[in-house]
Amino acid sequence: MAIGVASVMLVAVGGALGGMGRLFVSRWAAARLGTDFPWGTLIVNLAGAFLIGWLAVSLTVGAGLSLWLMTGILGGFTTVSSFSLQTLDLMRERRWMAASANVCLTLVLGIAAAALGVELGR
Amino acid sequence: MRRYMPYLEVGIGSALGAVCRMLTGVAVGGMSMPVFPWATLIVNVLGSWLIARFATHAMLNDSGHVARLHGFLIAGFCGGFTTFSLFSLEAVQLALDGHQALAAGYVALSVPLWLVAAWWGDSAARRAQARRG
Image (cartoon, rainbow over all chains, first blue to last red):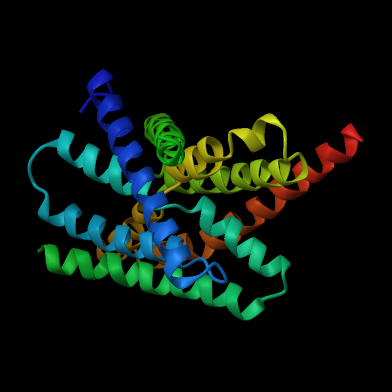
């Protein structure tokens, strides 16, 4: 699929929806689970990793749809920048356990979630 | 209406970030070694630098432009520009395609680079602040 106005619009609209969804989940998590640990970022990243794995194998029609759902919505929903910033903040507060838990949980569960999504999507 | 403003700011920033991420993918697509997910590595490292640069700047200048555009720039643009979902999918796909060492290398290389980039962005903001006096 050539990069044209349509692709840019699909990714932009998807990215906006994903970003707003991420804000909603992080606010919900901050209200429910507190702000001591970046639960919101962990939740969006695990959910997004599972969904992209599942879509990557089950979505067989339409480059436009995958651009909207995967590059746009899921790409915008999940985030590495907030993960990095929040981990750095935990390290700066010398909360080494929380910082390493954040890194390990995100990586191990995130990659496992994507693998599970791929497996279930088959 | 006010309570929906953050959603609008983050939505617009995230839309722009996602489009820049896609364009980075197109620009990097022509590079050699197509197996390795360079584009995702680049956006995630760049976005980690940028978010810390903005966040620290906003913290040190709480009435400045960056602080006012906090939602748009930080949760919006940087959040939409970087992606964890694609990172995890690429790691899994590399491993499933038989490139286990490359998959492990991708993960092992990415995380330290993201964190160093964030640390560096934070220092850059502090240095810029010190220069301004």
